[in-house]
Structure formats: C-alpha cells, structure tokens
Length: 153
Image (cartoon, helix red, strand yellow):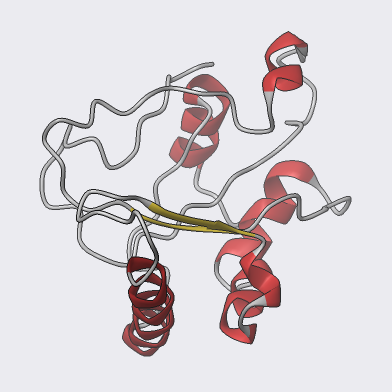
C-alpha cells in the first residue's frame, strides 16, 4: 500500500497532477520566505528592473542550503518515489517572484523544453518527469493565474 489514496491515484492517472496543501511547516515557510525575499530584494536593486519585473532564478540549490532540503522533503519525496520509482534525478530548481500585474497574461509552456513536446508515453508507463511547486504565499482566488495545468496532458 502506498502513500496516495485511491482518489489521488485516480486523479494522477487521469488528470496528471495532484495538489497537496500544508506540505511545508510554518517554520519552513518562514525560512524560505526570508531567503526568497532577500534574493528578490537584491534583484530589484539591478538596472532596468521595474516594479513589474519578474525575478526568475534557476539552479538555486547552489545559492542556499535551504533549497536543498526541499529536494528530498519528507512529505513530497515519498510521493515522488511512489509516482516514478527510485530512479530520480533533479533537473531544475527555480525561484520565481511574480509581482501582481493585471496586464500579464502569462503563457503555457512545456516543462523540460521543446523536446518534451514530441515524446509520447503510454498510459501504463511511468511519467518522464514530475514537477513540484511550493507556493509560499496563499493562493486566495481560483483561476487567478498562479499556476496553470492542462489536465490529462
């Protein structure tokens, strides 16, 4: 028996995504927010940075050990193992701070680059990748553009 419920397994198989709330403890959120706020503050001191500029930093594992703890987080890592097995490789770690901007329409893209668009797996195969998003602030309204996924894609 695994960690996921029957309903979660069904949603994963049919929709291709799961949502878990409250994964991070208040102390973890506080530490991560402080670190991300520090990084964002430094970014905003740069030239040509406006109030609407998006802070997008990749490969953050090397910037602060606090991000390393997320890689094998005791809540999410067992779920990832259940979904894809033991052959796990981290491909990207990223911090994004996107200030509110009603003009920003956002965009859909394929994680993993354009090559991932051409790969088709069968329904019985393991997924090629799993992405974990940790939201450090509340997502107060549905359909507010914080995250978009195409169910079943």
